Length: 196
Image (cartoon, rainbow, N blue to C red; front, side, top):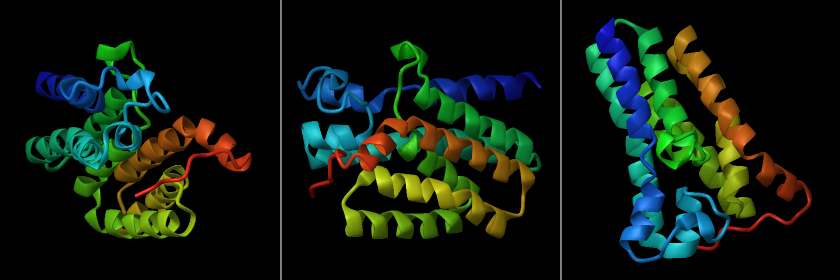
């Protein structure tokens, strides 16, 4: 049991690494929290630092979710509850990082990394939804919200696992909650559009 709690702590601490902040500081762009939307995630890094930094942040934030959950899958192959709790810990690390006073990102990329392990087929369809909404309306936030909204249903269909469904529901609910400012701006037609 002690090994499981160590895994939970490691997942949280890995998830808490502020990749966007680290990358922008390394590139001499200062504190990303003081630029653009103030968010440490890939979209704001893209807007402030360009495509390369944005993509790098997306990949690293996704790996923060993927690697701990992949490790948990190897260590606890017969325990979907433990796997789900490790996934939740990594996600919470990103959203509430101890290194930044518990003020982190919105969790989309880290959630993506988690879902790639939990249900790759669900991710494939959700990415299609994301891409379609982004292409049609050019709002990353709206695309993220639509993908987050559909993925719990996809996990139920493809995985048929209560623990995986519950952690997916939790993560998706948190993603939507953390986009509440974006939702308000979408409703007021003041949300920034994505420009490639």
